[in-house]
Image (cartoon, rainbow, N blue to C red):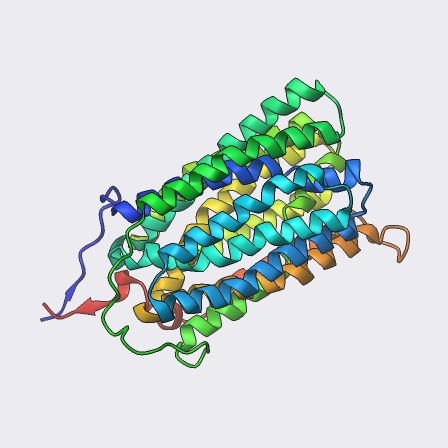
Length: 421
């Protein structure tokens, strides 16, 4: 007789490596969020760059990092050592951040953003594969949900610290100043260093999974149709998913003051942190696809709202709902990748996934910047245009994923697999 696998417990204990990776991500995001939301404001408010240049800076930084994720994930499969690749990546990002203190041109910011994202490119795929390696498939969503919750809680802390620095140094000023940005750079360096120490001291390299003796290939040839279809749909969605820098600039455009922008981002990350772990755990029981479809529909609704927003409080409220999209999709998508690929090729799979997302992020951000800056030049374009474009592609991607036969996309979920006793 064939029996169903038992359902995972939502509160199941997590291995040491998941907690250590979560702690490192908590500290890193506390550092990164002090700067990430300030950089587009620094470019526009201090250096006088246009939105097209913001799109170029963000697009090149993210896309180049994502290409590197492909190779770092593959290399972690080949050498079977994910820990030190992850530590190296965290270390490179930590070294790059303090140099933003002396940045005085948009090209300088681009170079440093490239270096910081270079480190992220090294660490992300090996770290995600490390998490997938050390948990049972029936609680994979819960593990990634916990990691995303910790990561986002760190972002929340970083934003609170940034807001306190802002209030202490600017006292209600509408635009970011160089002095405030430099204070944020200094403060962000402390948790970044701690993250490297925690990861280096705490992670234990897991044993190689069964079947990992051969040398993997850097190719899609070893992956099945489910994974490839998922990649195509994700690329379509990402083409409309421009950098969140445009949401920040849109909020400022709608009249939200500088302190309000940080408050808005705190709200978004709070919602994200609260939703991420239960969403991941429930996806272990209910299947990943429905969470991704619902999350992308939420995204489309938020972007439609940003297209018509005319007041700062509207942007703030929309950003809170945007946190729901992140919570429903980020950890679930990573767990879904692990569902769809063999264990010995997880690093390569995460590299391919992140590379596909990141490479597409460059045209996405460039298109958004050009659509916004086109106001008065080609007629009909302006601040609403990038959000109409992004929302439309999100709807198309959600429809494509929902339309795929369940046997194609859900067969990787433990919920649907039966095994002999």
